[in-house]
Length: 556
Image (cartoon, rainbow, N blue to C red):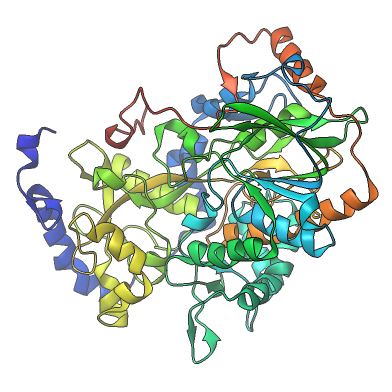
């Protein structure tokens, strides 16, 4: 579409979109009266997933040829990374005199890493024997960007048992039951801990204001307006600083170290400022490096922060840890489709649990607003590309309307700006008032459902190596429910910190080595894998593609 075709822009939207917006406005009163479409049956959900969800495109995946998960199918982008050659060899790094030696090393600078550090310290690890290292700044992470809320079953008629069933159902019953049990049972404890740290959850008359999320049978979503992740990281990061835990910033890990017994013995870091390698010997190491959004699976834009490049998967895989459920990717149903400047940014699910519903180009509602995320995303893709009922943006991307003015129509004027201030401001910066006009949305790459294998105590299969947060797999199965990511990083960050402290008190790392890295490179060569790719990626390279304006190749 040329600039001439776009025409004038009025109140943030091109004039040609106003005809569709008028249809949305014309049908709103009747839709409010009739209510949203009914939730799909199990058969209907399976059908829309098989036909339209990106995970079900067989040609977008292939099997791994090396490593502990050899034969598992996963997206080409993930296989490319796991089958890439190491950036360093054992002969490149002098490990005879490590730069740092600590009891517990935490790899990551986000929510899971911070929680792990705090509970390792609470379990008796002195701050001088505890080190956090972050790729970017402390707090540059997906955790701080989470918006809608955190689930916890902390009052009747809800219970951890009901939460457990919701999580299993949302994950298509592929979750590790022991991890789900840990997740839901620790939920109330986590909320209580946040309160003690000073987190300001939304309340009415002293009681938590709780809401539904997609795929939930009870209202258990606790939130701090629509910047819950920011509020939680505010108090958790402050506590890390109050305790005095050392955090080294701009120093991502590039390889794990193993000792002669095969135990994890620390990591090799890369100082982004000096471009020097730094070695850390540690009795216990916690992997909390986050997800893979910046791989842009199948060309989708992402909600993820700049450093989400799956470094932890690469390092753990070379050390011998299996990865689970990597064939599954979460595409949030409502990423921003327009304007292009914020393409792919998150339009929180809280907009829908407060009453906004997806409608097509003709102002017709077509899906229950709170289906599980994979089902909701597939339904939106079907409406745009199967039913040809999407709105096309100037850059060629299709989307559907999220009828945000419904929120104030249902709850009263001012509700949206009060409960969803960050959402209102995100569009307002681009001249769009979502209390008056709907928002154009389309699925965006949001979360790494799978990850490295852990048990309920956050232990990996490599002794001395623990993991928590988005880097770990098993708890969510093939699809994560809203609000369980913030809970996940708190529950398994805590368990990882406790387990790491216990291991470090009883075990001392022996002579560290990078022999496993050389062995993995040899396995790649033996498998006939010839590539110039190196991993971990550390940071994405956008110099060769116009990311914000590219057209999604949904049907290719």
